[in-house]
Length: 271
Ligand code: AMZ
Image (tube, rainbow, N blue to C red; front, top):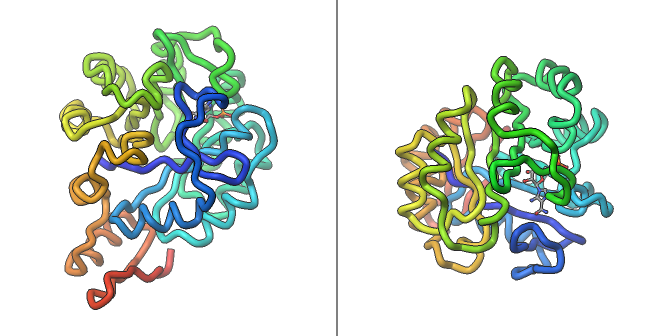
C-alpha cells in the first residue's frame, strides 16, 4: 500500500479544508512548490494533487499544476474539475501519471468509458461519499446514485483504481471508519484508494490489511499528528536509502531517481 500526501490547491495556495467547505480552511501555505518538494524529499514517492477551485467551479490552478508536474520527480495523481477531454488530456500531457474524475464520471458513464479506454490504467474514479450517497460538484450536490451501483458500473472499465473519500471525516483527524473502508475495498474490482480522516499508523495498518491500494493523507500530515518520516519509510512507496533507489524506480516504472548520500538531496532522473 502507498500513502500519498494531498496537495490541495486553492487560489494558488496549498490548503486543507474541513469537510470540503471552503469557509473552513484550517491550513493555508503560500508556496505549493515548496510543499511538494518537501513531501518528496521526506520520502513520499507519490503526490495527490487536487484543484479545489476547479472542483468547486470557481476558476482553476492549471498553470500551477503544470509547473508542479514538471518539477516533481514523484509519481502523481491529479483531480478536481476534470469534466471534459480538453482538461483530461492536458493534465496527462503535462505529466500526470493518473487523473481522478468525479462529477462527470458519475453524470456521463459513456464519456468515462471512452476516456478510460483511451488511457487504460491512467484514470481513477472519485467516489466522494457521505452517508452511503455519492456527491458531485465539489461535494455540494447529491449525485443520486449509491456507491455499490457506481462500483457495478465501473467493474469492466480499465481504470487505475477508485478513490473513496469519506467526506464527513475529511479534515477531522478523527480516524477512519474501519468497517466501512474494508467494505468499500471488498466492493470494488479495482484497486481502492481511501481518503478522509486517515489519522494514525493504526488507520494505515488497518487499510493495508483490508487490501487498500493506497491512502491519501491530508490534515494529519499537515498538523504533524502523523510522523511524516515514519509514514514515508513504511508507506511512501520509495526508499530514501540510496541502495534501494534503483529498485523503487524499477518497480514504479515511471521514474528513476538518485540520491546523493552526501547531502541527502534527490535529483530527478528520466520519467
Ligand atoms: O474538498 C472539496 N470540496 C472537494 C474535493 N477535495 N471537492 C471535490 N474534491 C475532489 C474529490 C475528487 O478527487 O475528492 O475533487 C475530485 C473530483 O472532482 P470533480 O470535479 O471531478 O468532481
